[in-house]
Amino acid sequence: MITLALLLLVVGFLYAVEHSWPGFRRIGAWWVRRGEPLKNRVRRAPLTYLYLVLLTFTTWLLANTSEPLRRAFLAEQSTNLHELRTNPVTVLVRSAMYVSFMELLIWWVAFSLVVAPMERRFGWQRMLAGFALGHVAATVAVACLQVWLFRAAALPVPAPVLVDVGASYGFCALAALATYQGSLRRRLTWAGAVVTVLGGLLLLDFDWTSMGHAVAALVGFASYRLVRPEAAVHHEARIRARHLYEMEHGGG
Image (cartoon, rainbow, N blue to C red; front, side, top):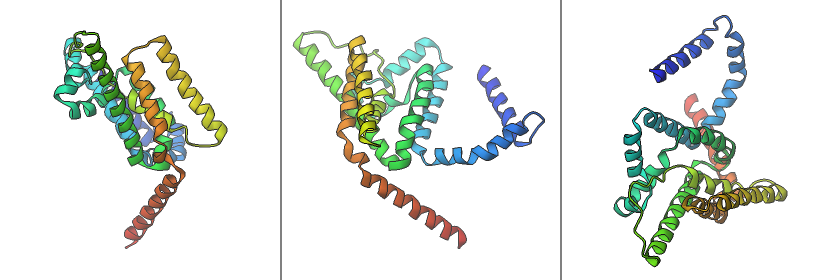
């Protein structure tokens, strides 16, 4: 009921702005001035915002389920050892599609500030590659370390209900990858910030997730070829060629 009420409220607000109702004219005028540049920024980072919309949808679905059902469902999407052993490929994809509500708010800001600008400069293919490399490498590295430690200490494998889902591994890789932009001073500052934050998390809470974040960042630092200057030049050339084709095609 709350979701339906919010949806109706949003639709009503947009209708009032579109038809310049009293009190909404200034909002409509602002949208005319700012709306097109904003839409253009979103269009130039399609993967980033498609992913964020997908996360919003899955978060909304989970918010409307009971706690026992939600935990059971997330356990099946988790990259725990049980799921990695039985459904390795599909679980690596599914595990990146679910976050908590608070995480969702953080990711909307973080991806818009860090990932979207890189996608506009280098293209969605390279951002997808960087995210996938970080997500998969960190997940596999943590799983291998878990197996080795459990075997060495003769400990039982964790229960399959362990939940480990989210976008953090992929984002950490892309955040590290963002180091290779701007001046040398900016690069050193950014790299230092990434190392400080992730190192601090390791010290404060030394767990599997923190180790996964560190591995993902190392993968991002090692993936310089994805964001080398030539890649930005080639991406910009493709965009211009596409625009020229669309203009000629539309004119014909």
